[in-house]
Length: 286
Ligand code: SF4
Image 1 (tube, rainbow, N blue to C red):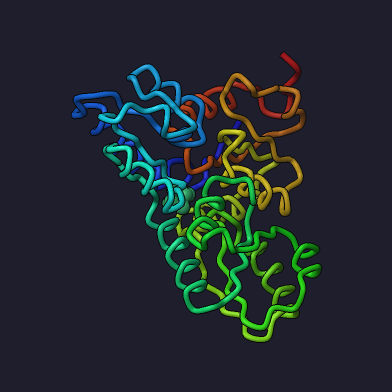
Image 2: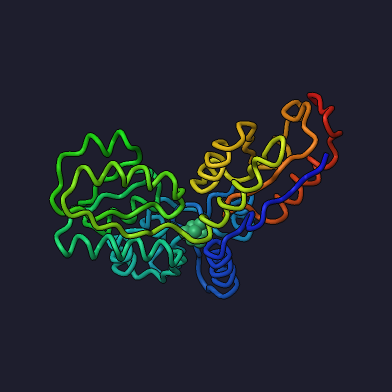
């Protein structure tokens, strides 16, 4: 089967940076090194780091006072940094610069007496971290319906989860404009995700089906699949080549591939190899 890989598929610079910082830390640290939450939302990479000794913890109390904690690219609230300092931990902060910007804008808006509205998934670690930078005062919404239900806000400041699609935030901001008098919007979308979504959406209508590769917990992978589905309903999301079901490709001659920002090149290569091996137009269940 013919396979076309979208430009910008896979690791973004923020993830590459986090991986490099974690690798360097493991190479150089004297004591134990632990990651507060999974370093990135990709099981293969997390397993690889686990084998190298990077244990995932959910709480700083799981670290001994001489330990090193790696803060992942999604970032954390200021209270986590304070707690790490008070426990005497060494902190390696891999927070992506795009996320840091969103945290700074949210904190600035609160300091200037705006009510902050964040458009994002309230359960996502990045969003939890940004909200913490507003002393927990930000409201999180993710849909037009939720925006329409808000009470009127005279001074509203808006930030976005970095990995959201531009089309989605435009719709929600449109609804928010009716709920506020002064509405100040900071575009905190990540440039890497926006480019990745753009190239995948350009490719999707020219192929019979799309395969999106990435961790099931990865927000940017879910967004990538969603924006592609709007232009081609035949979109399948997988974490690895083993999940590919040949029956998905019955009648398919040309398939497009893209991958979330935390997907390693090797995983993309394995998926492409598996798809290339399928007979064009005749794929059947294994
Ligand atoms: S997807 Fe964007 S915000 Fe997230 S780590 Fe990559 S560059 Fe940073």
